[in-house]
Image 1 (cartoon, rainbow, N blue to C red):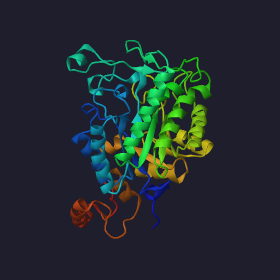
Image 2: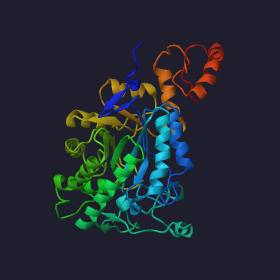
Image 3: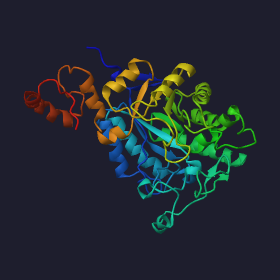
Length: 388
């Protein structure tokens, strides 16, 4: 039986992904002074044990002021780099590709951890020691009433931040990551430049689409120049804002073409988030609801894409790839529900040849292989994937 598309390798530049499943970056809001800890090690390590082709560390701030919350991971100093290197090494040891997303939260920085409200900091947050800091954005427009007023970035500020992105990229390479993503989505700084709703600048970095794209493209150029030439680069976009007057799919197609010209290899196609939570938008939600964005950008910009958004079932993911709508499948919250989703998907999509659990870590597969004959007597041969 031929290997399902979901489990066929993909080579980008000099890196081969063992399968098409990417664990999307998911902020844990649990770092201390930007340093990843044992929670992050176990959180990311179990996805590598679970068979994902790529495991991407959460949005890692390039400067302290670029964190969403006090609990965000950073990558601006040696201690942070060392903690991330430990994680990258373990992910690689399990056969997965270690990846990282670099980010700056812009006007959505200095906010509450989600379990405290996921909104502007309050007196209760200050009492816990989460004090606000000065935030920046393309224009002095707060995200919503009652939120911090951002400082509009000057040209010199933007130059300083470009250098921070460059240094963070060098740190990511030194930490052993093999795939890097630039975060231009979900209402964070680079998305704020792209959207006409948050970018009201009257200089070369605002105005028409070309002006609004200019700074994010400069960051992509900066990162690509610092990132090893044999390692692939992804750019995450909010394909549409989902808000009247915001980014449309045509804008994201144009941006993807320009990002490709500057060395991007993949466009990670999300949506929304300009106002409210990371994926907030007035978009109908259903299974695969963002796949059409990945499809359109892949066809029109002629670049590899990653599809994300309520892709929960193995056959659903397989169909996206078979139909040529994307090249990679991003799994996020479903991986929290089932860290072994890739291994279960493989059992679901293909007849096992030889040992059923031969591609699982030997520490698990040895036990599970010996349990399987007894389960098959109870369940029959038609239940290779058990959920719930």
